[in-house]
Image (cartoon, rainbow, N blue to C red):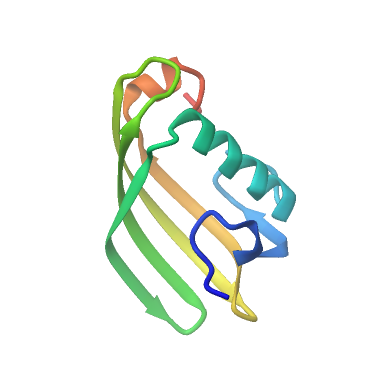
Length: 110
Protein backbone atom coordinates (compact mmCIF):
# COMPACT_ATOMS: atom_id res chain seq x y z
CA UNK A 1 0.00 0.00 0.00
CA UNK A 2 1.42 3.40 -0.98
CA UNK A 3 1.52 6.06 1.70
CA UNK A 4 1.06 9.72 0.88
CA UNK A 5 1.98 12.72 3.04
CA UNK A 6 -0.92 13.40 5.32
CA UNK A 7 -1.75 9.79 6.08
CA UNK A 8 -1.45 9.40 9.85
CA UNK A 9 -0.01 5.94 9.42
CA UNK A 10 3.24 7.34 7.98
CA UNK A 11 4.19 8.45 11.50
CA UNK A 12 5.15 6.28 14.45
CA UNK A 13 2.69 5.90 17.32
CA UNK A 14 5.18 7.73 19.57
CA UNK A 15 5.79 10.50 17.00
CA UNK A 16 7.59 13.54 18.43
CA UNK A 17 6.56 16.94 17.06
CA UNK A 18 9.13 19.64 17.81
CA UNK A 19 7.53 22.61 16.04
CA UNK A 20 5.16 23.58 18.85
CA UNK A 21 2.15 23.43 16.53
CA UNK A 22 0.68 20.19 17.80
CA UNK A 23 1.21 17.74 20.63
CA UNK A 24 3.23 14.57 20.11
CA UNK A 25 1.65 11.33 18.89
CA UNK A 26 -0.03 9.86 15.83
CA UNK A 27 -3.54 10.99 16.83
CA UNK A 28 -2.42 14.63 17.20
CA UNK A 29 -0.72 14.42 13.79
CA UNK A 30 -3.95 13.11 12.21
CA UNK A 31 -5.94 15.92 13.84
CA UNK A 32 -3.49 18.57 12.59
CA UNK A 33 -3.73 17.22 9.04
CA UNK A 34 -7.54 17.26 9.17
CA UNK A 35 -7.57 20.86 10.44
CA UNK A 36 -5.07 21.93 7.75
CA UNK A 37 -7.07 20.28 4.97
CA UNK A 38 -10.23 21.98 6.23
CA UNK A 39 -8.53 25.39 6.32
CA UNK A 40 -6.97 25.01 2.86
CA UNK A 41 -8.66 22.09 1.05
CA UNK A 42 -6.97 22.79 -2.27
CA UNK A 43 -3.54 23.17 -0.64
CA UNK A 44 -0.65 21.79 -2.64
CA UNK A 45 2.98 21.27 -1.68
CA UNK A 46 5.83 21.10 -4.14
CA UNK A 47 8.96 19.55 -2.63
CA UNK A 48 11.72 21.66 -4.15
CA UNK A 49 14.62 20.15 -2.20
CA UNK A 50 15.12 16.84 -0.40
CA UNK A 51 18.26 15.47 1.21
CA UNK A 52 18.47 12.13 3.00
CA UNK A 53 21.29 10.54 4.95
CA UNK A 54 21.06 7.50 7.20
CA UNK A 55 17.79 7.90 9.13
CA UNK A 56 17.42 11.66 8.53
CA UNK A 57 15.51 13.53 5.84
CA UNK A 58 15.39 17.27 5.13
CA UNK A 59 12.72 18.70 2.84
CA UNK A 60 11.85 22.18 1.55
CA UNK A 61 8.27 22.57 0.34
CA UNK A 62 6.54 25.48 -1.37
CA UNK A 63 2.80 25.50 -0.63
CA UNK A 64 -0.08 27.25 -2.32
CA UNK A 65 -3.83 27.08 -2.16
CA UNK A 66 -6.89 29.02 -1.08
CA UNK A 67 -7.78 29.86 2.51
CA UNK A 68 -11.23 28.37 2.93
CA UNK A 69 -12.53 30.98 5.40
CA UNK A 70 -11.71 34.00 3.23
CA UNK A 71 -11.26 32.67 -0.30
CA UNK A 72 -7.88 34.42 -0.42
CA UNK A 73 -4.76 32.79 -1.85
CA UNK A 74 -2.03 31.48 0.43
CA UNK A 75 1.62 30.97 -0.46
CA UNK A 76 4.27 29.83 2.03
CA UNK A 77 7.39 27.73 2.42
CA UNK A 78 8.19 25.04 4.97
CA UNK A 79 11.44 23.37 5.94
CA UNK A 80 10.99 20.00 7.58
CA UNK A 81 13.57 17.77 9.21
CA UNK A 82 12.59 14.17 9.92
CA UNK A 83 14.03 11.25 11.84
CA UNK A 84 12.92 7.89 10.45
CA UNK A 85 12.62 4.65 12.46
CA UNK A 86 11.38 1.35 11.08
CA UNK A 87 10.14 3.09 7.91
CA UNK A 88 7.98 5.60 9.82
CA UNK A 89 8.47 9.23 10.74
CA UNK A 90 9.50 9.15 14.41
CA UNK A 91 10.31 12.82 14.89
CA UNK A 92 9.82 16.08 13.00
CA UNK A 93 11.08 19.62 13.34
CA UNK A 94 9.43 22.10 11.01
CA UNK A 95 10.11 25.74 10.22
CA UNK A 96 7.67 27.80 8.17
CA UNK A 97 7.75 31.11 6.39
CA UNK A 98 4.02 31.59 6.47
CA UNK A 99 1.88 34.07 4.66
CA UNK A 100 1.03 36.64 7.38
CA UNK A 101 -2.68 36.27 6.60
CA UNK A 102 -2.66 32.75 8.06
CA UNK A 103 -1.90 33.96 11.59
CA UNK A 104 -4.57 36.64 11.30
CA UNK A 105 -7.08 33.92 10.48
CA UNK A 106 -5.81 31.96 13.51
CA UNK A 107 -4.88 28.87 11.53
CA UNK A 108 -1.17 29.37 12.19
CA UNK A 109 0.81 30.47 15.23
CA UNK A 110 1.82 34.12 15.56
